Length: 458
Image (tube, rainbow, N blue to C red; front, side, top):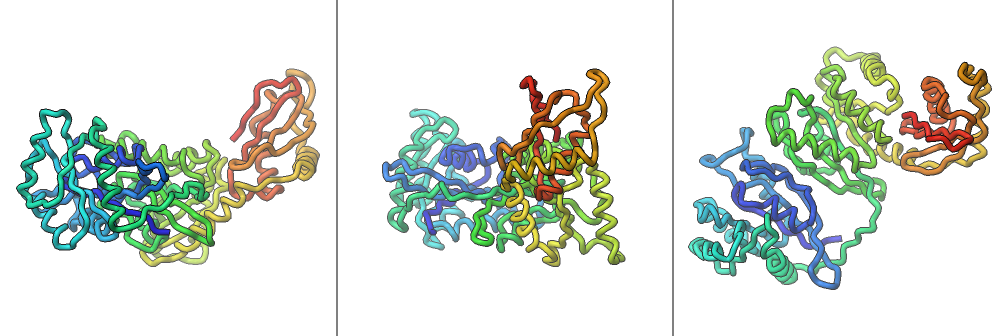
C-alpha cells in the first residue's frame, strides 16, 4: 500500500532532524549542534492536520556535502548517495534553509539539482525564532525559487502548522493520501552489537537494498534505522542500531548519545539479534549486551557474522566456537546461535526463520494441568534442600501460566522467600525444556501461601 513520501534535505546543520522530530512528534532522530550527525535515511509517520486522519511518511536525510564542505570520515560520499535515494523515491521534497546562516552556494546547487530532476518541492527557512527575523527569509529568493518560501522554527514549534498544511497540499497534487493503518501487528527486531560487527550489512541483506550505510569506518551508524519487511506474510521492523562499546572507550559525545539510543532500543524490541564476529572471541561487552536482553526477558538470537574470516575451518570449528560462547554466557546460554557470512550471503536467510521460531515460542501458552505434571516430576526427580531455618522443605502446591510475551509462570508454595537460587534455576530449565519454551527467556514467579513478596529469578 503506497502513501505519500516526503524527503527532508538541506545543508548540514540547518535543522532537518529537529524538523523531522517535530513533524513526527518523536525523538527518533539524533540531534546535536555538530554538523554531519545524520547519516542514514530515517523514516517516520506524520499524522495529518486534517480531520480525515490521513497521513504520510517523512524521511530525514544527511546533509548535502561536497569536497569543500565535508564532515564525514568516509572515502566515498555515501551519505549523499543515501540522500539521493530518498529524493528519488519521495513524492515531495522539503528543502530546509538556514535563516541564520543566510544563502550559501550549496543551497543554489541543491535548488538547481531539484529543478533538473523536476521534483515537487516545498521550501522552508528554518530558525526564524521571532517576527524580527522574518525578513531574513527574503534573501533566499536570490536562489531563483519560483514557489513561496515558508518560515518556521522547528526548535520552538513556530510555523509548523502552516508548513504541514503546505506539505499536504503539495502531496495532494501528486498523490492520494491514505488512511494510515496503525493496527497492523509488527514484530520489532533490534540488531545490536559492537561497532563494525556487520549489523548494517545484515539489515541490507534482509531487506534487499542498501538501506543502512556500510563502510570500513567503525561506528558508521548513529541513529536507530527502522526498516519494515514482510516474512511469511508477517510484518517485522528491523531496528539497526549504533555499535555499543565499553563506556571507558567512548570519548565522542555523539557516539555516547548513539549508544544510549541503542540500549533503549532493546527495551522497545520484541526480539533482539546480537551480532558478534567470528574472527574474535566473544567479548565481555557482548556478554553484557546478552545479559541486558535476558534481564528484560527478551528473546535473543546470537549471530556469529564474518564466518568467511575464520581460517582452516573444519567440521568441529563451529561447535567449538559455540561451546566457548555458551560457557561465557553461563546461566543464559540457552539462546540460539547462528553462523553467517554477510559478505558471502551465507545463512543470512536463516535469521528470519530463527526470529520467527523465537516469536512463536515467546507467545506459547501451556495448559495448567501440563505445567503441574512437569512441576511434580521435576520435584520428584530433584527434591529441594532442607530449609534449616524452618527445619522443613519447600512444598509446592500448584503452578499456572499467567501471561505470554514473556511467558510467565506463577508457582504457589509454602515459603517462597527461602527457595535456593540454584533450585529456581533448575526449575526454570526444566520448564523451558519440558514445556517447549525452547530458547526464549522464561519468567518464573514464586508466591508463598501468606502472599509474601514474589520471588523473581531470571
